[in-house]
Length: 309
Image 1 (cartoon, rainbow, N blue to C red):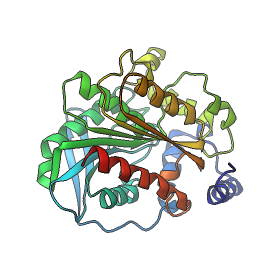
Image 2: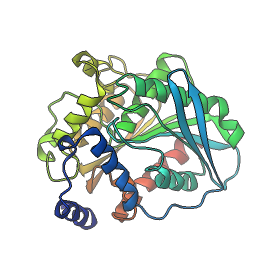
Image 3: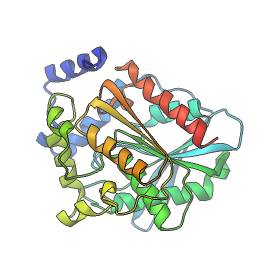
């Protein structure tokens, strides 16, 4: 189908403003551009409580934001990792979608920061993400959460982290993760995916932009085949939590996400793969500009109600 009219209007407006592609930006420019997505969002919903925390880690202090909705306790717990190509993104840019998910799912949502590249390359972000899940498992009860109903979620590079953390938790014998929600995940640096060519330019995130983000993230070419960086490279995908994989039709990362969904299914992991026709990468952060982003929220609610009930 054609590009959603609202998404196309946004693309046209950004082009008229002269927005550069990410690979044409400096790291600082890319971080600034990512933060502007807040202006594309609907007004943030009220939740019962929001807790801003500073958690000390050996490598430095990390910030978590805990969203507690007005819902019966104990509630499911979802740890959320923001996108931004491992280079940018913040708790601020996912504040609005995290509030919406907390309210709609009746779940405690913990948005977790992590060290960014290129200052802290792989595996810094993955270790920080795993630490956040450990923290959530140990502390969720303090916020009305039930750690036995624990899920992980992320968008784009954050979805990569959610997939990787699910694998790390399996390999390291805990904590037990009951669901993984992957929103247009970036899964593999190298791969001959048709969507990288078909959707490589003109849809906000370019294939060259994806390659640039990977260049900032990985410390060496050897990292590209490490399953904790490229989850689809894992020799064994069995025993991973049930997954919801959501992709967008006009996204260079579409096919790698769907390929990962197929690989999970082949390994016996319960998986739902949903492609949202007409939509583009980043739409989960565009609730005000692209109303159809609500369709992704609805899919998440359905999945959470089944897997974290």
